[in-house]
Length: 154
Image (cartoon, rainbow, N blue to C red; front, side, top):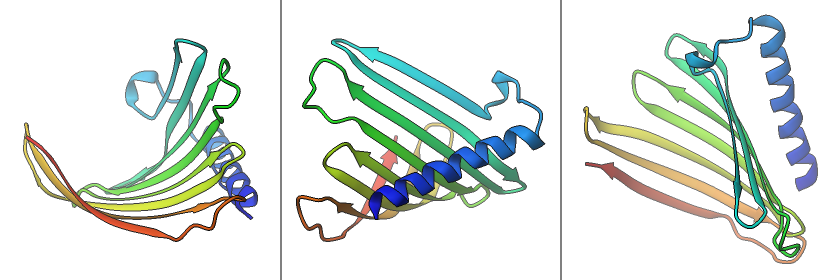
């Protein structure tokens, strides 16, 4: 079940990227529509991440992120594959994110998060939010987890 969900999310993200490529001319790197990062840590850990703006119209914006992390030195360290889709309503600074993270041989973590900005100025901000997640693994039975948070930057 979880493999089908991960594959479905990755196929959806791939189709969204391909559709965006066919309908919209390729954006210039400075316009902030896409970003690819890679980093090689010592010893032999590779991190890849690609973020793309899928859709923006008026106050609505959808972004997708795909990431991969693998340790080539320590074979016991599992590879991690992450797919995430974020929605942001710009005037209210409200956002919703859905994420699937597959940890090789250990299962999949599905999570969702909603955030609302309460206060924002040039040097500070205050956000509140809720999150939900559940781990699906062949080894253990997982109960869903819920949480809330307050995040500030001053």
